[in-house]
Length: 423
Image (cartoon, rainbow, N blue to C red; front, side, top):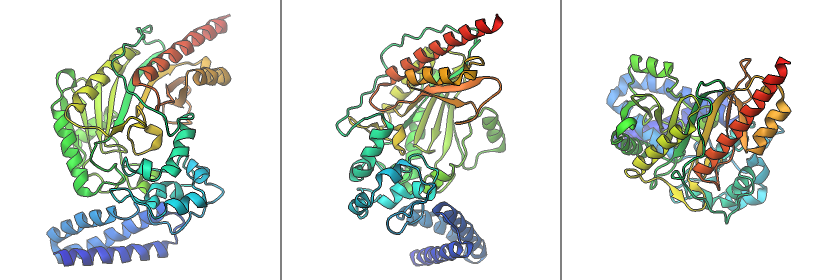
């Protein structure tokens, strides 16, 4: 069987190479897609002869073999940048840095080519790098350190991070009728200690991670108790309901695909939510856990406290990857530290027309403004998603308090502009 699997894997690699040449693709992301299609065509032709059991064995072993290669496709030598590459990767991956790092590997075998695969394949990347494990941030520190410093407002190699869910917020709910705040949502990312991150795991590790997480989730108590829904084999009824609830997540975009974060989809992925649908966990998406607390209205205290209780219960059963320098370790360096995004959907029809003032208030409180349908989108309703822009070097309580303070000032300005509009 091992010899047969090896023959399958070798043949698939040759077939994938031929597919890339025939398609004359321009990027690693397109190459990966073409190779994937070719591989499935070969599987279909082989299935009848070799039988389902061999095909399944081949599938699993190919996943494991692919895990040892650069996740986004191999890039030979120093990247060939184009005028469209504007990422921090391009800025800081000088030929000198490349030469210094090109032959290094982390303890899990993650390489520089895997770190940069997504940013090379996608010229419109803003950051362009993904870590394959905690070790990536030190082994490839000559690349990651300046990226982290620029993105996280000067957080340097000697910076220290701290965590705090215990400090009580000064955040009374002042919008009980939801005149302005439609909903509140706070999420954090977490990854398991003792394992690579998503771009670095093999199939066996992926399934072990899911098992450990589900065991932890099934031990949640009180209002956090709920049910886990694995994506693989999900019933049509469950999929329809989860889609209706806006809980169902899809296979990652081309950035995650090129980074290797979509491998073996949908194996090892799933969704957990409580009975009240105010607590949700995504398993093995970009990070191994995305823990979310949410509800309608503007009771930030209640949402934050629920999240804190959930994290506290889970970390008693699951050890998260954390260090005193970078905080909670994440696949993307933008999420390091708290790995937190605290946001509200808030109605500001008058303020949003004064974009200069709107942005000035956001900058003052270190907040990010997005359309409710995603970044760079706008909505005629005047409803916007406003969240913290800082993550590293500040505690969870500090970031949520800052978000609350900024939202209150925005609402006060909205009331002022609304009153002026009446006269």
